[in-house]
Amino acid sequence: MSGTLAEIRNPAASAVLRAAPAKLNLYLHVTGKRPDGYHLLDSLIAFAAIHDSVAVREADSLTLTAEGPFAADLPESGGNIVLKAAKAFREHAGVRTGAEIRLTKRLPVASGIGGGSADAAACLRALDSVWRCNADENDLMTLALEIGADVPACLHGRAAFVGGIGEKIADAPPLPPAHLVLVNPRKAVSTAEVFAARQGAFGKAARFSEAQKDLAELAFQLVARRNDLAPAAIALCPEISEAVGALARVSGCRLARMSGSGATCFGLFEDEISAKRAAGSIVASEPGWWVVACPLVTDTAKLEPRG
Image (cartoon, rainbow, N blue to C red; front, side, top):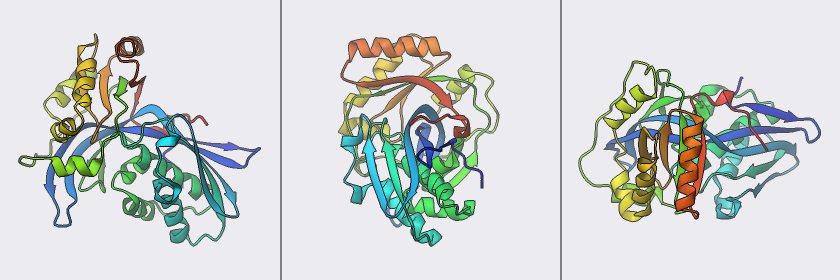
């Protein structure tokens, strides 16, 4: 089975390295709520070139180590979604051996960009290769949903419309090239608390079928949509409003919006120069924030991972 994330084998360590890119909700409508409490969504997702990395090699036991700028913010290994994914996949595949998993954490934790879900998806892909399981794609998607609602979209790895609680995935029309500035005021926001605080009527699905010829057209489509979780998230974390405002004020920003349940916000820019200039301006005014400029990615198979 061919993976959706780029893979590099390290002959010296017999390891497989996978990229786990940030997932962005270009818009997010909450369309309903199931009897079991899960909310129904309609969202357009794409990815950012900034990513965590998951390196896996076969071993006698199953272990996880974490490094990188945000490793200290991860939950203990027993509650970590990457180890949860590894255990679930080993049981599902009937594998008796183990694996050494090394996670390099570059993305903020609990930040609305699916970092943990992307890590779990990358782990599943890497383990499938290391353990030579050749897992069925539909089975892998079913397992991904059991691990977390955002994991299937991250496993899919392409720009897509996502529905249901995250399990209904349909490829989006081609998105134009764009660059991003990601901003997080270094505040963790609980997804459960944001959904619990959400008020008002449910929204409607707002998908479009035609490809947008350039970023101006895509931004026009997105402006007519929204993130339904933003008001609740801002009430819990007012700094989100400051981050969106900082992005909206810089030159060249076509759209500024919160991603997911926050607190990470993104700005869309035409080119790399504009995005880097905007990121530098925001860093100068808010040196304590996490700010990254990078390209928008619509197919993570084209993303080269780094360890």
